[in-house]
Length: 385
Image (cartoon, rainbow, N blue to C red):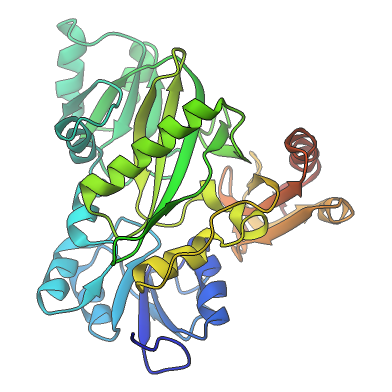
């Protein structure tokens, strides 16, 4: 087995945001040399990795040249130049997740077609090359309100997703390639994180439940374990494993799902990396998702995904009406509460709904943890000077 620890092995990561920052805590724990590529010289990873390179993740030369300096390449964001990854892979560089999987996942249209082709249940959808095509579809009564609109590429944190209820909503959409989905009545939004290493060893984290901000379409709370029936949880877990199996995926895959009003499970979308829905695991699990990502891409034995205790994650996002140098108001008040652990992402400037950090609450009682999470959310304000 290759020696990754305290050696000359170099791990490369495309993206230097908060996910990379939390991954670095694990590479430092194992003393794995880690290089980061990001276009922002002040990215959260910049000051704490072994090597930081400034470059555009969508630029062929930047990604290709960076890849030539490392022994294995991974990502913390999927919007990267795939042609560069293909060339690097052809030249022998090990890349996980595989470029072929990123090509499917980068495009929501390709992703949805993959589910259809592999008999993976998902919401009915239509694909449009541009906005006029979607408008024609409405005018010809092929599609009707309400529906969910998603940009086919580059959506993140609620950006690129909108519920379209009327003509005004339709007119406000950008002129980009997109998909539309039938608005599904659902009880819960769920997620399952699956890890799979090169040898094919596979493990899942417990099913989590996600509560979303109604305006920003961002996750506000992640609750583990999900407050659902055991048979529904098993159905979600089995479906997530099917997605990983059909992709022949290596790495960490977060599978987001809907639990419908009739307890059917539908795949919404996937993220091929550590994910917001797994942040609770840093405090609540025997093996957190970032360590598990490393274990999977380096083909190490996978860790125990069992929770030691119930965990809830609260996102800390910039408050509306504030932009500029960040201030965490009333932060000390939450530090007095048992089981509360904050994570600040190192972003110096806040803006409305920008993810600035998260707080984990652990407790033996999930309902008590949810109460504390609400208190944390109502106490801390992320504002500007």
